View: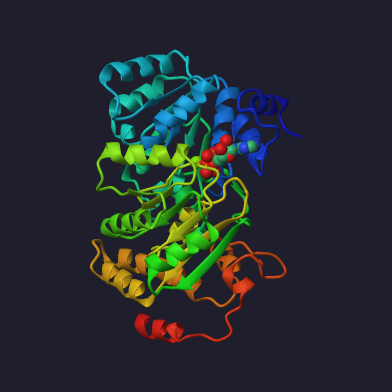
Length: 419
Ligand code: ADP
Ligand code: MG
């Protein structure tokens, strides 16, 4: 019934009273040296699943994470809690790096965060080979999947890491739980013997709403004014230009909005992200470059002005709302022009026919979610292999709250387009 030491660390180091969901089981399994594949939604608390075993087991927990921009923050947070944490990534100068390496080799660290690009370096591989590693944690493990939307070639090196240190238990974690991705993670990381932990992906406090797109900025403004005045939130747009224009539009209309996209310089991006995290009631208008790993509990809404490319993307992005468990809204304006634009992007995209077919099937699943007259949540969860319960109606999405009586022809038009 749980290892008392892990509960003690949870309370003493992290200041929480109890484990949530599958955390305790995962932690105990990894403390005992087992491999684990953990599928848990964003915000559920995956970090503790490897941080606590790293603290309890002898040696250093080595964490592979693609979120280089957040490493500093994560490590600072851990140090503030008294955890001996460090990281190795490309932003460091050689002296800094050597110092961290020395701490690692002598076991004076509890956790070492490693950027995936470090795996390409033979020097790093040799370092890991020689050091006292307690566990390998592979965060955002879906990055190993070519099927998914965040593929990082460096993640393929993780199997080499395992070959060099077959003695070290591994825990892979992701919020992407489709059967195809799960199978691919397992296969590429050779996690055949891992115990698989699947949490519920339902986020009951998020109200899903998908509306027909007419004058999207105006519709957004109405939505914010009537339901989310003064609230913090994220607005996603497809293009950088649309991000800039929408942020200006909202600002002109009295809403504190900041743009965020990869075309802005690093300083501006960091400043806007920091303000969003620290200040209250700010709206960030962004491309999907924004948000991975962002941990702000009181994001009250996530709005999409353009159609996400996949259900995974939609789920990840909307999942940034309501991490504190309080009522929040996922709002999407959906129109046929988006579908046409996305199909065109796919048709002209790089890569082979199989790749285009994958993109196309991602888009089709997203369209099915937009077009459904049944419960959105039921659709969404079905996509992740879960059901919404006996009633098949969540009672907290637009189709449950105001069932569409007749359909306006977009379904028929869509069918026409996709054949
Ligand atoms: P994930 O990686 O799954 O998206 P995080 O590990 O970033 O989630 O955790 C999300 C938030 O939940 C963090 O603020 C974390 O401190 C908090 N949290 C995690 N586990 C617990 C717990 N057992 N009790 C209370 N808060 C928790
Ligand atoms: Mg995480």
